[in-house]
Length: 210
Image 1 (tube, rainbow, N blue to C red):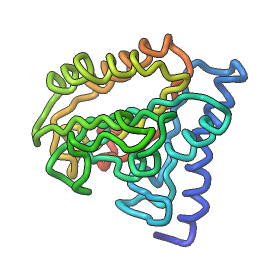
Image 2 (cartoon, one colour; image 1 turned 120 degrees about the horizontal axis):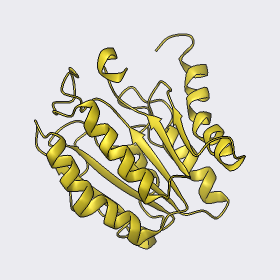
Image 3 (cartoon, one colour; image 1 turned 120 degrees about the vertical axis):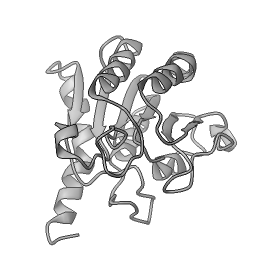
Image 4 (cartoon, rainbow, N blue to C red; image 1 turned 90 degrees about the vertical axis):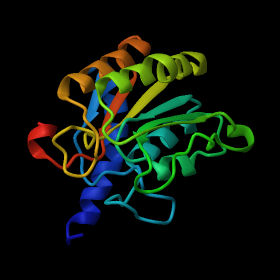
């Protein structure tokens, strides 16, 4: 952390809502929030894994407060424990994560499916180290996209981490830029090319992120 980290975190936490407002105002069809610090590890009262505030969760909660159903797709190499935990009992937020396992933070098992009224709204797809585009596309085709279609969200938020890139020093996966393009395109089509906001999570190779 530095002296400016808290201000940066507050701007990052509000960026998703700004993107939603731009889409609703007719200024854009999609949103991408290129923000740091990331957010998906942050819990309600605990910072974790470079994350101070949970940017995706703030946006999702704002949408739910207005009566919207929200789906969150997390393709960061790490499981978004914070996002899952914040909505573990909510039927209004569907959380789907495709992630490297076993890996930090140690959550995201298949058996973690939510609880109470939110039972079935957490969907975890753990993948082994070294998984690449073919494995991710298969997971999207067989699980992610059908579940989104079944749930019928009003908004889709993407925890868009790029630490699964083959050149990333931390993620341990083998994705390439074209694989991210394929995943993003499939999600956009699932939402009829609107009401979709991508929010940057991890990614620690600047060349790969660019």
